[in-house]
Length: 254
Ligand SMILES: N[C@@H](CCC(=O)N[C@@H](CS)C(=O)NCC(=O)O)C(=O)O
Image 1: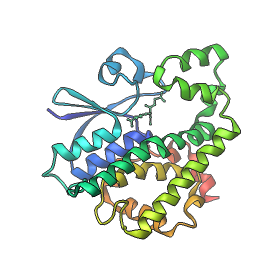
Image 2: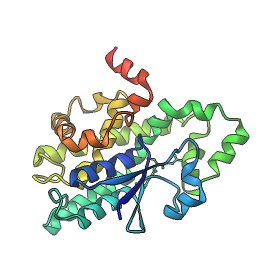
Image 3: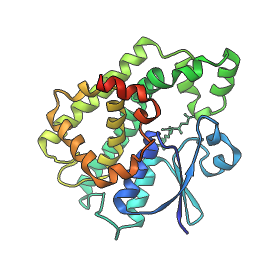
């Protein structure tokens, strides 16, 4: 049975998995989840992903969730398709997994703050306090995030802290890439590169490329990432924030 991918065009976590599937040449059936309409919180979707977030896929009837886990699953289940995305040396594999943990815990969380503050906030500002409270409480897993967003925006401290975390990520990558490279854990392009890529795309779309102006190895890495055929397959038209918010493109050009 084909793999059914539940995802959202512009979600960074969905983009990770789409890059991975494209790298491995694995076909998928499109099950687009409209987050704005709350489709991630319907009983049908919660039966697939009880966390109420995208992405998820159903493979041979089994739901697989968590974008990083999904990438590892794809690489394990289709070893004969495309190059391996996981080092065979246990030490290198541990290094890759430590990056995956870091990516999930630090920059993936941090990039949401400017995304919501700079791009998505109008939707929440338009809600009444009661409507917002109902929305915020509708997903236990995300409640804390939406408490901090607090309908009209994050505190200056939280916004600044998220930028510090993104800068720290760029610095950590620059150090790793200048020591070895050309990929995050060395010679092999791995799931760590895949999971980091959409976060850089989001930062670029948010007009934050100055973050890696002084990090030439990172800038080269991102160019190499974007040149891979899988990248365009995952970022099809309509899937970038600059497609959803064309004013971002105008700002970048102007
Ligand atoms: N740890 C999860 C996080 C998934 C996640 O937070 N997805 C976001 C989109 S990137 C989502 O579905 N948000 C639902 C919402 O905003 O209500 C993963 O990596 O799969």
